[in-house]
Length: 331
Image (cartoon, rainbow, N blue to C red; front, top):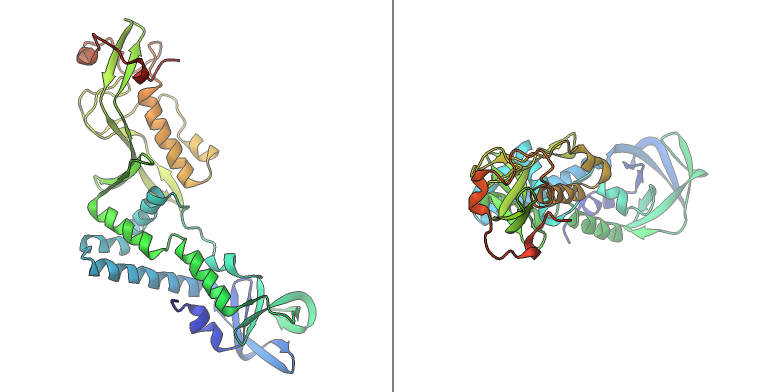
């Protein structure tokens, strides 16, 4: 089991963890009256410092593994704010995990917010008592341990491995970022680095649109639609929708051109953020909107850039049999 701050530091002396602050046996005025022994305590630091150092050490191990695997082009992903942001975004797209929050992993594994740790066992501290005084408050010490230090450490490592800081998953992100593109057909979602932007994308298989103005059908090839992702105030944010590959469609301003912004009318992009709180759901909704604009929203009574009756779409007009199952804008 990897060594954490529990076994490497906290286990060395009688300690108290209270409201995410660590106190250890020392010369301070705070104390815990353990049976037969009074243990004076002094404040050490916030537990967040230990956690930050532990997680940074994990990142270093990932970088070393990347070097060993000759992923030199991916090492930079651990060296700049922009690249670290891309690791977060890559894992969000690849695994659907939540973005890392500011909450301590530690808070999710400790059996109580107030603990006294002595001889590898953790005892609860209850407010209002007479055998402990810490940070101006009186406590009573529970006589039975609620957990062992080893159990807490095991839970902590499990939480760390399932968080954004999972070294194996992060290495996969590095590999994907080094290649410049990732896509999974199962989720129909991927990302690519495009013009130095991190772009999430989805694909649309060939489909058919109906034009009521001339009672005709038009076929469309595969489209790759994306939106730039970035972080703003530690929250996911995204830009407008673009068709990445060369394409022609009534919702696009040009014909056979790449990187065209899709006309979405009066659509409110921020509605996605109001409806969906989790970032992975926001991405899913954004990509669903992207597919819907091209496949479902074209109507003859609308005001697109062009109607399908425009002569430039003549080459896409179907003159023979029409597979009605592929028509996406009826109903």
